[in-house]
Length: 471
Image (cartoon, rainbow, N blue to C red; front, side):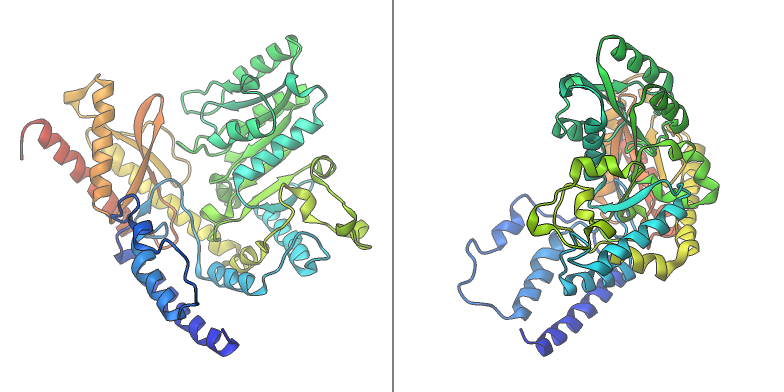
């Protein structure tokens, strides 16, 4: 493909991209694909000769797009948001065009130094102290593994005696990361939660003391600021005090909710985070930046480097003593130029523009919660400090019948999602099947939230009619 042909095709794709962003709200969120359907539509063998680019893009439009789930549909309320934005998309195009390998300062000086600047910006936006240094990882799962590995190496004791602590509501990546870091399953302690599904700090303290008395070595506590199921906030200050008392590494996983720390009025929810040893949040969830972009902050950089630094002769340069080589700040050697899209986003919207978006989403979630609380038969089982609201429908006819109520709510959610113009997901809270409504897509408006609520009420009414034999 010549540069001129590339120019022509790129303009055509840019037109398609702009149309997609404009019209995504008119598409069904979830495809009707059956397992294997897309695979069967594609050739089993690669072409021997190159094909016209127009044919490839036609297959993309006709075979691939209809089988995609549209996470950036304004009716997307499932899981957590996977926000992107036009400036971030354009920056990704530039990143792909440059094709740079950003593993060290030498391989791309501007990429390294831009990442330093952008992470300093983020640290200030979040209100973190300047004792933290930041690096962009791919995901929070990787960042948590990085924290666990660093904590493992910083602990004073043989690996088989090291213990890790996380609440029953911690993300599954914590258990997976602990296993990958070499902690035996029997050394991962599950800390009980309180009535708001947040970690019980007193229970944590007791478990740590008990393990130390048994000759074990507490190595790491993973606290969660905004749990996956309900966005519960673990009491960070109380947990940090336990960690400092017993010299335990504290990692704070704020993958979703951390974005809200740029709001001065929400920062009190993160009280104590400044005492953590490491902290992670994902701009690719709620800060308009394409996946993948996870911001990891660490206090003890030398400890991080002791675990991850590598310096074979073919990577060494004369500038190494004076620069940062981010290859030594995580698992990967090769690194993408992720800082560019974050830079584009922050400059395009400004801090106040990003705050306005977050406030809009939180306000819509608060309105939605009000509707749920005022509707007979609906309950809200958990606090909702951000953009997520958990709910259950509990008709009086099924009062006390937990299994049937779980099936009931499962049926309501399936009926809601069958509309394909809104999409919600579920979790389990206190052992009960619970519907989750996560407000956070950049194009979502009040009318989309109202549509979701209308679908929920209608689905509950239909299920109730079925219960009474009404067609």
